[in-house]
Image (cartoon, rainbow, N blue to C red; front, top):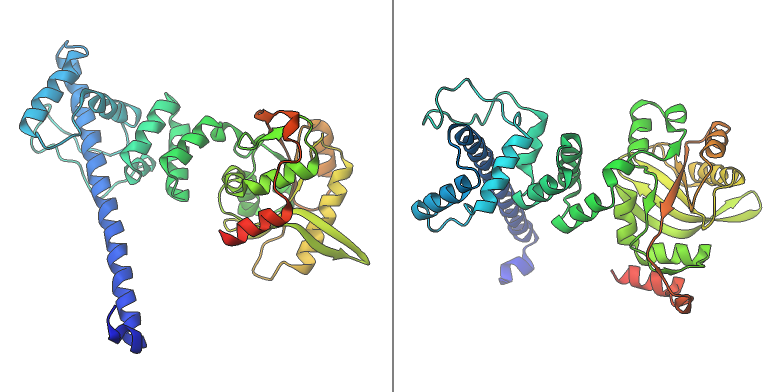
Length: 362
């Protein structure tokens, strides 16, 4: 590092700005290359589909194309038979991803893919990596809506391939927005829709390890011990604010199980965790906490606070009646917990102090 950067603040800021612009340019260039490559894969998949209609080669078609392209382009590793099958599937799964002009015979040199002009909602697939697309093709089969849901989630949340695969395997698409709530009645328009979108039923807590007779404290401790996984399971935009948050209601002290802030809905989210079945009396407690947060923490820039009870199970009719009786935006969801460990592990979870220390270090 030069002496100038240590003594001249303006020069230091300029250097940092140049560095930032360069990295932003790198990201834009990488995205452009990815977009061009995937459009090429799509077009090659389309051409293979046309060839399949002209020749009765069966599986030999892929190996023949692979061999010929590899001989012409020996430094390119993309033309294995397996990858060519994926390209063909890529086109067949999203045949309308690109709006093509009218074209003539197969493989005409002027049959070029338009880069501007009319767009389709399926073009999201060109913005995520090829490896992610292959995972989605494998897992979503013939369900295009599900595939596009995960493509959007990948881009929206910057998911790695492993996170994407985990979300696919935990049935996120099927569970999304399925919790019982009163959001459409208690929240205005788009905020109600967004709030519903971030809830699911059931939540999947398979990332936890608990003994079979776990209690509420151990469940909450375990969730915070795995806070990163818990945030991923909660959904888009959740930021962890703390556990056992102290609030004062009149002359009494109350403690919120878990408090989050959701950056999409722009509101606090109070989460009460119950190790047992839902009881309608839980709703009064949750509603009180929501009102308290609105009075004591919410600012003019925040939307109304949302409350969510996460419990082991529920009678859905009882939950619906309890929600209809409340004027606060509340929801109820169950959770799945299948990975249990033997009884002798009871009490082996870290203490609150250890968890807080670990989180502060991270």
